[in-house]
Image (tube, rainbow, N blue to C red; front, side, top):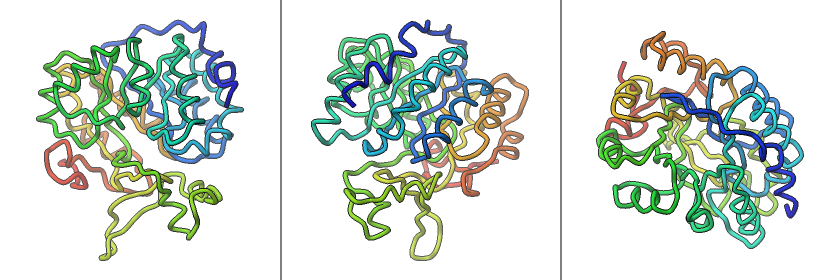
Length: 315
């Protein structure tokens, strides 16, 4: 961990940031516990084939996974930068000890790499320099946006549970925003490991059981209905967000960055479909009919419409 600057950041220190097109697709950080080689190969393919403009990488959920990614992360960053993708380094959403805070300080001290801050500690360390605010920071009103922008935020990724009416008000502030449009939605994060508890294990002796569920572990209600998904410390929606029906309206209102959340599927094809939608070559209905789904989950857009988030999207 102590060599994080040299190991994590050196590959992109001399990489120029690409020019941002009018409407960007971004690839969020992988939040699941994928094997290092699978994780590396996923990003290599994104670099070579996916029509995305910006790629977020880094461990967001559990610091215990970081040592497994460290050996492959420099190659991933270099490959993405060489392919013309802007690389953003995402921080943990929950920093709980001195070692994790020291790692955060190292990330925040390297100005050559854009950082996505996913908790308040990261915001404090990044104050005064350009950074992105991630979806794990609660941003629900204009005052918060204004404060973040004054602290150096060049863009804010809004929480997935915000309704479209609230997003419209936040757009009016003029602060650049990013909206997740695909994938299971991050809902909460905890110091406790749900995956370990499900296997009657303690967090410190979890045996990394979360790796068994590369798209999250489904959680059903007492009536047997799929409700949520868990990923180590993280709670996700069971349904897969698809805001395809609303993206062109968001573009017209001023949103320029749209996030795809990685899953164990053909994310290159997912990116191509959304790119075709933004370019006017595909309708929202055609997108929904063609998109793959994680674990066969239903497509949902309830939060955006101001109703329960697990509500199926309108076709």
